[in-house]
Length: 515
Ligand code: BG6
Image (tube, rainbow, N blue to C red; front, side):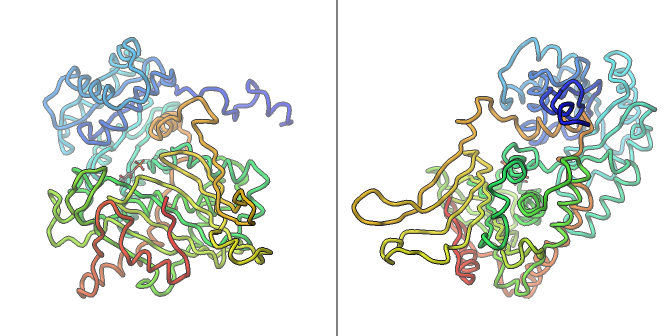
């Protein structure tokens, strides 16, 4: 294809400037009463409809153990949209969307309910032209995946007719270690082919996360210094100011490392560290991400290169908050970590010798997710020592959220008669450069499911590799717990985590950024 043809949106199907609108289809949502459905999935579906990206006959079927009629389900969706949608509420959009709402009451082990679900879907194909194309979104605890997928299979819902599709969408956690991740994959893989399984890691749907690839591979100036010749280390931080809220049942026993390092933070690492893919299609991206994940190693001394903590009572947003062990539903003896930090090496020519420090925690000082590429110091400074006392290391900080953008930190002369040099920031702010507000990650990901567009969904191989990286750390911590040797260290809510995490970096002569 010539360059001219590539520039012509009418000729080139790969051109992304045209709005991508899903073809005829429907979605079946399991877990309609959960937080995820109400706060993220339902609002995102409305926002997509409002942006004109869903087909006119789009249908949403809720399945749950509730004695509801279609209208009751519609009311639930309505309340969730009113409370959480990103775009303005428009009655005409709502009315059209709501015509496609159906509700099927039933348990996951109820054969009759799955028969009803099949009939509902067939009726929708007939009445609303959904064309036999349906996505099954399992917004339910993973312990039920097997039951639901088995039922979909037995009731003929998993297999599409010719020219149509069936897809299954699952949310993390994808297992709680390598072994269970494999078991989960066997359950799904027995019923759905791998290109019909969509695993959601919502970080990949964030605009700023996708921008990591745009920055790296659309520009000339970053790539030459993106390696161990210039980079001293990388810090990937996902800090939250919230506690576990009402999620005790999910969180206790899972902890910070399984909850976000295994997925969000290792995905960020792979985008930062990977080589240029041959294209941005799913296969090419996957190859590069897998190469990085397979090159990640842990240092030998996990006692010195990892840290974990548990929030104690303290302050958040001016309010006194309880500690993790006082939260409702948490065992008083729980050793689940709410803060985790790990040191990783990427054993490639590009990154050998550059540590990647990953940390995440709840009830920290601020909500912020960022990737900081911290550069080596200049080999020589032709200034008096006193002039550069306040000069730190250059850093390129990709601000994932909340103040989406990029900051370049470098030394600059302080105005005045002296040659004094201090760090300054140069900022790119998304909101300042683009007038459009960014879509929510779930809008992008749900649309991609309906379009069957896979680049932003991790494959099972990536999930396995991520567990292979993390399992030794989790096993090490579990052994420490068993022997009563060490426990997660308490940190006051509203601070920046346990002292052991600071000590971990100090051993390497480094400090965590205080965003
Ligand atoms: C989820 C975790 O994946 O991400 C939660 O399970 C966490 O514990 C959430 O709070 C944070 O998402 P975001 O998009 O607000 O950074």
